[in-house]
Image (cartoon, rainbow, N blue to C red; front, side):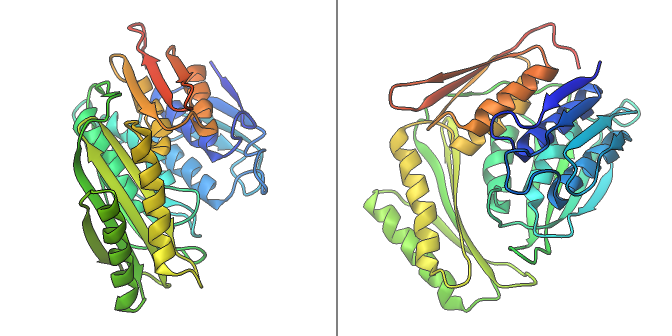
Length: 355
């Protein structure tokens, strides 16, 4: 049965598209999305979104209409089960490689090859450290770690080359192995920090830029009486660029926080943006950062059991992805907001779920 999705719902951006594509591939249900990205200054599909469409289509030999730049309506009809394999996708701009990776990661984790367990690799070229998207280190250290070590999903990622706005040209690789089930997660009480890391990413810049970024993070963490493992990363890239990514793994939670460089912006400011975001989350006492909170909804909607996690706030992105999964799957997503504006997400597993 066709699933009809209004792309203007909630945050009205690309997340509706990516979540719908993933679920269509996994369930085999055709989907029609109208009013695509109606809530954005440039509505309709952009190159990054088209790459997600074509990547998802490649996994299941989908029939697609409306896959053009600016299109505000898309139909997507899978014609085969998910095919494990080796894939390469080039966005052609500085569009976010990590968002394309998140579109295909879960379907490939649930893929089969002639009935046997199968592995896949996906290479994506484009932006790796760009606005409005998780950077490469977030994908490899927060998103995949939360799923791999707690939900037992077999997926890892790495960044071989950085790509910044506006030239892109970066590259990430996603490796997955298929599995039968996804385990639910319980990220409510954060517990003690197990590993706190700060990645100081620079490309084609003098050494002192990275050194200043490292020193700023170290001084900030001392004020919080925390010790962070600071790792300078001089990544190859086709253009200069910089980013600071702070990641935290706790006993029962994960978080990631980013500062992005741009011409004329001092590295100290880049570092402090990531540090301030981390400190706000740390003070909240919640287990997951606000971005991971919405990224967990899709995999946990397919987990065999109930899942719960806390977040600094219930965002429009979180409400949006909760809406979309309930159009495809018989699950209940409950979003509870406390007086201090922190939130609790609960996904109730229904044993009748069949995909």
